[in-house]
Image 1 (cartoon, helix red, strand yellow):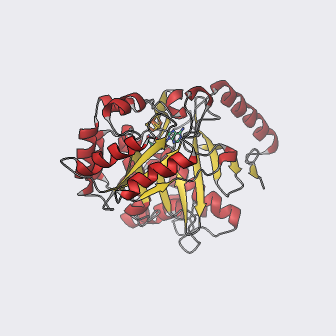
Image 2 (image 1 turned 45 degrees about the vertical axis):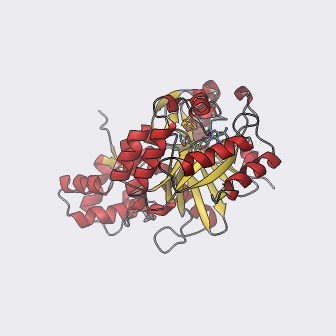
Image 3 (image 1 turned 90 degrees about the horizontal axis):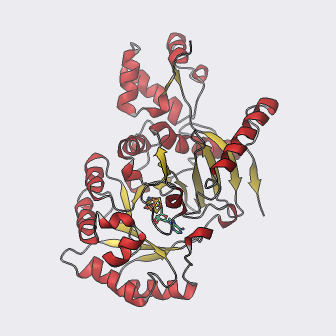
Length: 390
Ligand code: SAH
Ligand code: SF4
């Protein structure tokens, strides 16, 4: 008979303490264990030299530390690194690391597929498969931080230089429709005995699940990005179907309520630039009116995302001159506006491309089967290809 091992990556600090208490251990042992897991990236209990041998034996008998298996690992010419991760039953999700001068940002996924089905998003086009577990969400940060350190020869632990300084939940899925696991993972990101990230450096991006924006403000307020993409309800209804349930006036009101608890004093509005759909000066002026002139102005910044086309979308990216002119209207109104650089284009790691390799389920399944065969033959490290294209 095989016993199901408890995956310790599923536990927030309180749950890990409760688990340790169940083994007859004091709370400080849970802290030590948590540091081994989340600060040293340990997955082998025997490495945990300051835990008593008896505790290590108990842990070995009942627990495991397991993140999703890596299917592929690519590094782009600009340093962007993308992992495709196996989350079972033919599902795969992606995690992307984006290095910049003074920070390293990890973009993580919260669901396999997405039920919101925005018109311009290839994840949405895949449909919804399932929610990720806590271990699968925090496991992306755990895996990426320590993989990055290993490839650079940086020691694990608090003394080694931290590679990931910022986390954005902008990968596959709608984080606020997988609320509890997302919040548990957020708590670990913020915990001093885990990753110790400040609330300002962790961003949840949402298509606008209004009740859950309120709940997030109470349970774990972090920086908030809202995917707006449209300046009026008629347009947004067609681009982000969730708008029919939570129209703009309700969304704006929830943003204002959120700001009372948020670690930053603005909301970031994301706006995907779609040629001839939402990108005229008139749309920009309507946006200014929406966030400024309404009954309740919302302190905000805009992040314009050049649309990343994919074959079935039937949509095109606005040209650079249009994006610039659009940004100018917002900036002339005094709204801080940035245009997102597309990163990792050569490895399909740009926004909304994250499903690229996942769309064809049979292809992924074939690849994973092959990988298992190869790993049996050549050892578990096989297939962790790191491609650096110059
Ligand atoms: N579901 C959440 C978070 C994941 S999507 C949300 O919608 O906010 C992260 C961001 O990528 C969102 O702003 C989304 O609108 C944007 N995005 C999706 N598909 C895109 C595409 N093809 N091109 C550019 N941005 C895209
Ligand atoms: Fe889901 Fe976000 Fe894509 Fe919309 S943009 S389908 S909410 S992942």
